[in-house]
Structure formats: structure tokens, C-alpha cells
Image (cartoon, rainbow, N blue to C red; front, side, top):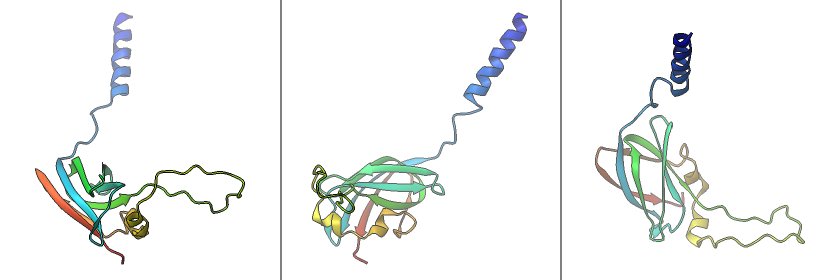
Length: 141
């Protein structure tokens, strides 16, 4: 009876842990800058979509337009930019007060919406082993 119990526990443990730790993939360091029409983008995040868009890594953008992603997937990556949301009064009755959020820099307000979608942004880079430096230059059109 004790052998059956031990076998049951072993089988249950195998089912709970699975056969492996998931798929691993090679990574690399990515540092870079992001500008819009030559002006540094001072907020948001750079998002890399690698390995057929199943591996996603993000790096925050600092006030000078710099970003860093230490565990970026190697190979071809599609890129989009995430920006802080803006508060809209559309559809909100005038009597309802909406708290002011952080001010959105003017340069961010001018960036075309296509850069928020990795499939439409047109931003594609190749990440190689080791350190990578990329310059992301966003345009009006």
C-alpha cells in the first residue's frame, strides 16, 4: 500500500511540475534613444516583440529619450511604443470632476498612433548577441 501511495505522489508531482521549465530563448542587451522629428521622446516605453511575437520585452523611456532592455530577444523584433494615457472629457457630464493626471509632453501628443501598434509601426530591428544600440526615429508620416 505504501508503494502505491509513493507512486501516486510521484505521478502527481510530475503532473504539477511538467516536463520542463518552458521554452528558453537567447537574449541580448539593447540600449538606445527615441526621438520624434529630432526631439527626444521624454516618456513612455519601448516594446520589443520577438520570436514570432511570442516573446515581449519592455524598457521605460527616460526624460532624455533613452531606454534600456537587458533581456531583449535576439533576432528580428517588431517594435511599438507605449505612451501614457491621456484623460478625455468626451462623454463625461460637466458636473463630474476628473482628476488631473500627469502632464503629457507636447511632443508625445504629436506622435502618430501607428507607433503604438507593432504590426503597423514599421519599426523592425535585428538584435544580435552581446550589446546592441538602436536609434528609433519617429516621423510625422
